Figure 1: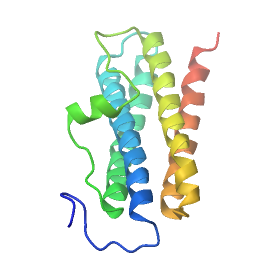
Figure 2: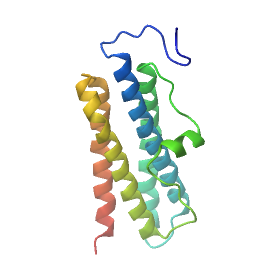
Figure 3: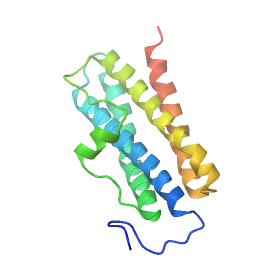
Figure 4: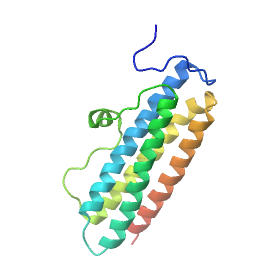
Length: 163
């Protein structure tokens, strides 16, 4: 019997059980990435103050990269044979990043984005044990690239908070 929404006959050298665990982890990464995308885009639109131009452009670069990343993550979930979550409701349930109420000031925006970048890094890192155990090199590569970028973004944002 074939499970609903699961591709039949996938034989890529990773067990069905491991593919499911990896897809579940990637779904959390997708939710975190999309939530961070929305938060970053929101802050891009609403930032004010003396660092407006710098932050407006930095946030644009970050949300643009996140828009591309969510597609890569979703496509990896699909390649593993599982449906990618794609609704706000699903993302809210899966994400470790909370939505923003109101419009924080520029410094608070930077701090919240540091926290978001770090959260995505932690989520990506948490998937590694099952990915390593399953010898899933394509997912390991994706996770490594995501962590490297989010750690760099967090560092750059944190640098703006130094006195």
